[in-house]
Image (tube, rainbow, N blue to C red; front, side, top):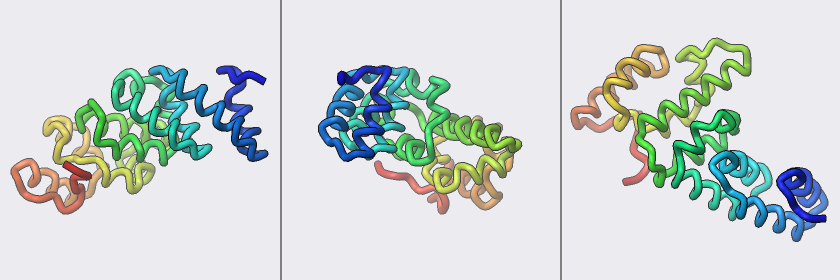
Length: 180
């Protein structure tokens, strides 16, 4: 049987279930060769689900090179927490921290709506969980931070103060930089 875009997910599932490694390899190769802006995020999700590290690296590289095209796609909001963490942790993105922050909040808000919850700051914070601390708020645009983050209840008062102090050179106690 030949791998195609119509059967790749089913073939991957069956190959994985029955430990048919050459089938898994063929599916991974097909997915890597067919990376586009519209499916890179889906392929990243698939790579996480099936532990396909080469596909994961290829997908992240593609997303890193084309973040706007990939992450502004509606499908990007359907990724799971593990994929979201890979995106937020990425040091290679050609996106500002403000854009990453907006994407993370949009993602969490969609999760709220899918759970029939109000996308309040409190619920968004709960759904972001530990991802919240991967966002470098001190690098987020100050006006955006003031208008969209500090005023909605996403962060507590101590965190807000720490971010504002970091704008003026003081070390942020809550949201440490990942790497420089």
